[in-house]
Length: 283
Image 1 (tube, rainbow, N blue to C red):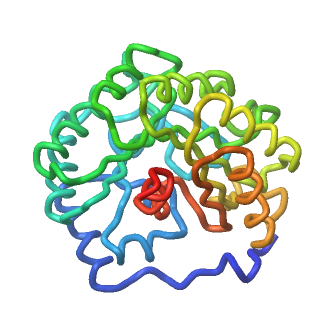
Image 2 (cartoon, rainbow, N blue to C red; image 1 turned 135 degrees about the horizontal axis):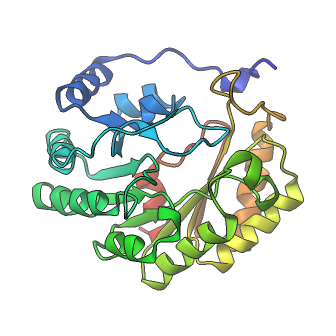
C-alpha cells in the first residue's frame, strides 16, 4: 500500500540538523527521532528540538509497530543523565522531551535514570521545561513514584491503540495498566499526556471509547497520528486516514474534555510538544 500524497516528506537537512546530529554523536546519545524513524526529524531538528532516548537503543519488548530494535540491552550508562543535560544546555532548549526504551530487565524499569536526568537538566538549565515519555514500568508503582517525585512539567505515557488490539500491537503491555499509570500521575497533580496511532485496524467507535477511558483517568493532552509501517516485519497498515478525519478526531476529543488534541497524519508524541503544553495550560 503506497503512501498518499499528504505523507510524503522531503529529505532532512540543513545547518541546524547537521549541528544537532553532531552533538548527539559527540555525547553518544540516542534519540527516538532516529531510532523510531520519526517522519518529522527534519522539521524538528532544524528547529533545534529533539527527543532524547535513555537507556540505550535496544528494547526488551517486541511491539508490532515500533522500529526500535528488540533484543538484549547493553549495560546502563550512568553518565547518560549528565550527557543529556549537557546537550540540552548546549542547545539552549526551553523545552526538553526525554523518553526511553522499555527496560524490563531492570528492577525499576530504569525509572532512576529518568529521575536523575530530570534533576540534572534542572541543574544545568533551570528555565527548561521537561516532558517525560515513560514506559509502564510493568505496573511497578514505586518506579512510577520515582519519576512523579521529580515533578516533570508533563508526564506522557502512550496508550498507542484501542483495548481490543493490545495483544496484537503491544503484546507485553496491558490496557488497564496504562490507564492506571495516567490516573496515578494525574492524582499526583501532574499535567498528563498520551498518544494514539490510527490505521492498525481500530474502528471510530473504539477510538471514541478509548478517548473516554483516557479522560476518565485524567489525561489532559492527546496526540493522534497515522501508523506508518517501518518494515515488512512489522504490522501492516490497515488504512490511511485522510487529513479531514484527523480534524474530526481532534474536534471529537476536545468536545469530550481533553485540554488539547494534536491530531494529524504525521503527528507523533513529541511533535510541537512545547506548544501543546502551552495550550493545555492556557498560556
